[in-house]
Amino acid sequence: MNFGGPGEFTTWDGEPVSREPPHGATVVVAALSPDGWRCLLLHRAHHGPSWDGDWAWTSPAGSRKPGEAVTACAVRELREETGLAASPRPVATEGVGWAVFALEVPWGTEVAVDGAEHDRFEWVSVAEVLRRCQPAAVSESFRTASDAMGLS
Image 1 (spheres, rainbow, N blue to C red):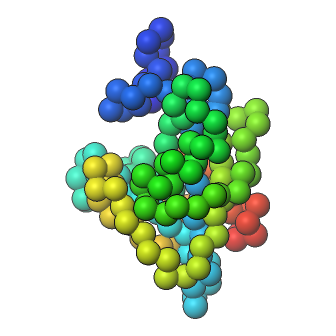
Image 2 (cartoon, rainbow, N blue to C red; image 1 turned 135 degrees about the horizontal axis):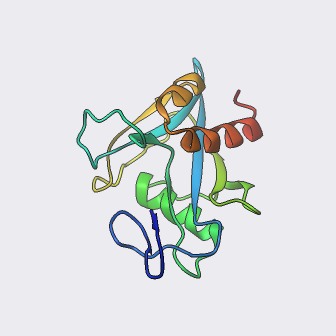
């Protein structure tokens, strides 16, 4: 996001972002697999399928549109990025720059990535999420939700 000055509250693709916090929402999606908790990670397509740097892997997340309720943002981003139509539980929504939500789904739930912003998804362990999600701001959102969900 670009928060440089007047008229510059936009996403990477030029969409307007709420000037009031929270500026967006992250939804940590978890499922109890036969091998323990697995979390949904999406791979961003912006730099190609082999990209492994900062912001390469994230939970479903996105910017809040001006005037949009933060819960509506979380529901919209979840649906747009994964095809999941659900109501995630708010974890951290007040006094934060970026809201955090949690959603537990049954193991085997079908996911459909959006294709434009993400090129694939994986269900990975909590430890693997923390390893892949960089910079720290990305992994901190995950830690907040995983603690609330009792995953770690």
